[in-house]
Image (cartoon, rainbow, N blue to C red; front, side, top):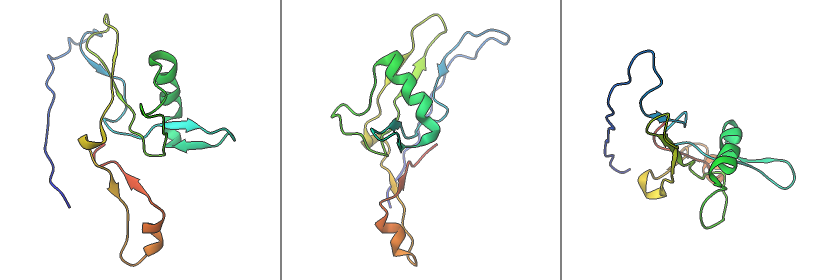
Length: 121
């Protein structure tokens, strides 16, 4: 087990009926990227395939900077401070949110599968 630190981001309230104000493009703060493999299969979270492909098209992001893709690569945050400004990409280092490795005391096969999940949505 470990410890958690809580953070909060506070923005000026949006004006009702307008598009003014900040926008986070991601549907969750942490989620896993998804890539098409050479054989047509999917690596990572299939739910995020379109978002990951959009990151490649719009931001030239194609995975971790070291070039080694895995099923557990965090998707960068896309934050747009105002609709009139360009959105910015923020890559999240693994140290920000260490993954939770899944296991079960009665089902050791689960541990052997190497499954993990991100600690916060």
